[in-house]
Image (cartoon, rainbow, N blue to C red; front, side, top):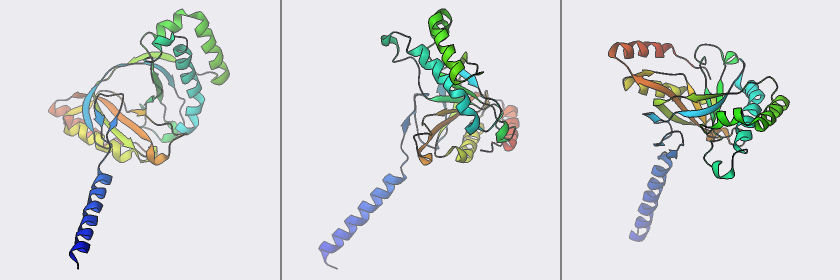
Length: 242
């Protein structure tokens, strides 16, 4: 083989190898809920700030059926308050990422799941809602029209130390990602200090299933050897059927 052709072949092979390596490298995502950049499917233990929320509870049922019934009330409350603030105070008011706590997902079939869904708001939102009668009446009127019978409450969600992981892909394929997070928590000497929670960074109405980004987390605390051993046994029975 001529030297020139040989060099060209070697160059192509190197180029192909570099491209393959880049394809395999996982992209980091700067997720707002934590300071670290999360690498997809790589669990970590970190700290997360407490959040002020507007919250709705879903009735038991398939998430796809129950969510459309409550989301207008949640977004209507958050946006109704936010847009009533002075423009200078709106930028840091809250966010559109939905937080979801699933307290019984590991205990009952999917058609019996209940969720607590929330949106971040400013810590002054509840006081503003209660003291501005015109704003409150306008929000309640719209809620009655768009989501009759749905109650919205204000809460502070506590976090502190959390075990957290970023899943990319369909919700139905979260099982192995959740298991990986469970194993990391127990192998790091922690136990649960709260319920299963997810933060939805993508809008499923506008995002391809394969590209959906979901943060999965649990508040955790350090456990004794006995507590960790007991927790490890419990995790073996802790199944979430997505």
